[in-house]
Length: 293
Image (cartoon, rainbow, N blue to C red; front, side):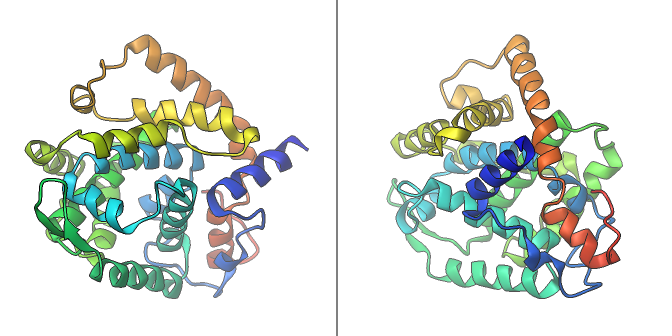
């Protein structure tokens, strides 16, 4: 009963549906863009670390005025943050675990949307969502946030070579979305992210986004869960972020308390979601035998 309760509410939280992801079962044998032996499949299989990484990446992305302006002007996220999370979660699932057709369709849909996203940011500077510089910021902060959360909440951690492989694989997706010359290693990715620091700004728009993420709208039954996940997302930020946010760097005690709580919570959540998107994708590739992600 507990597993079903958790499964139903979390699936509804991220997809608006309690139904299993049967769309990922076909066509038989289709390995998708990356395949089951990729680091992308491994990292993205863990719901807990992915949602933590997703929230921290949204905070980082909000710090770039032009990246934020595109969402601010052309998205309903302030009225429907949950809907934004649903769309992002589906895109990640489709491009990671979907068939080649599903993944390509998701990429094409996003690229078409980006063609029409243009305007002026809060400093009066023009922006376009197809700008490779902005696309690289979004891609880099997202991949780094996902991997950092995985390293914090999964064991065993990925070694250096596996981390580099993850960035190299994700580079394929980022460049198909319009970014160019993305880094292929963890070290290069960290350096590329830090090169954006002079462009970041924590103004009223960014502050409203951070506040919205901290008060994530959700069903009363999942409110304690999301409050803890939101705290974990905040702690998942790189240390250079906190002075920009006018917040003290979290202490080791704060990190320990939240990490311990998340790891305990993750046990029943992972058990409840063990037959989720990743499991369905493995079943598509290998047949009735379900290989563990």
